Length: 77
Image (cartoon, rainbow, N blue to C red; front, side, top):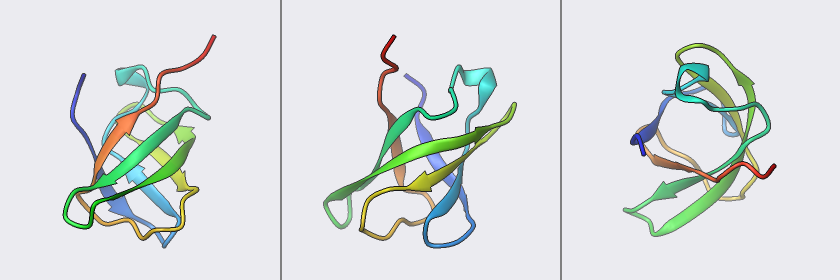
């Protein structure tokens, strides 16, 4: 699977992911935002998908940072 990361923070809850519909990412798909330096993860959800990137909304309580690693959760049929 492709390594995904946060490419732009909009505010404390909204961020852009460096992958989009070209990478088979779907709207409302869940993902985990992993921060290895601080040993925690947040849950987030994709709210809008574009060709090269996706806009996401954080659901967890911990702060997110530029460059955090993102792992997509598989879609359920």
